[in-house]
Image (cartoon, rainbow over all chains, first blue to last red; front, top):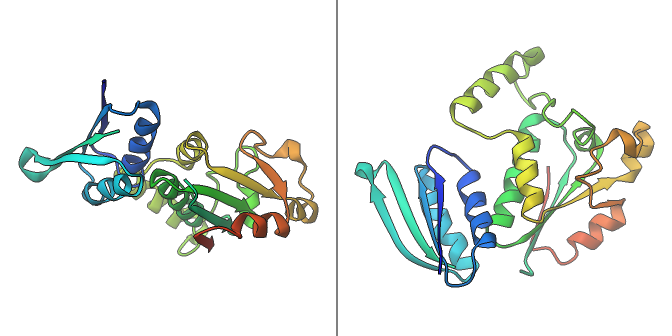
Length: 75
Length: 139
């Protein structure tokens, strides 16, 4: 099982969602995808996209006093 | 897969091309299929070197408003239309080019970015594409 990091800090709509989707395509089932970002809407929408695609969100964590977030997803 | 978004891009205005590509990329990112049917002024944006050239739909002011909005978009880190198009293609998005528009405007395939085009067609192609779509928009 591999870990893939998607760093979309500073990026705005629709890049965080799109980069996540690209990572899911690269990842194998069981791999961990870790997304780091700052765009507030994407923090809500990435889990929505994961649910729609049947992927499991393991953790959503705030960082840097709420300015950044990190989402862990199991492919 | 199975769910699908189909967009008719009739306008060649910069802001509307952004809307179409952002929505289509969003659909792909959320696990749907997505197609964009480029027609009329929208098809003009498929000409070589023209994707980024559209005016603003409102407050264009001979290009001044456009410049101002471009500057603000840069500041907000909004990606280019070229980047949105390459993401769209990478995620499996489909582009249909309207053949009737080509006839009306006297455009040949050589003038267009044919590497982006998956299908050439007219209204029947759009209807066939939209027949089983969950989302369809006219922009």
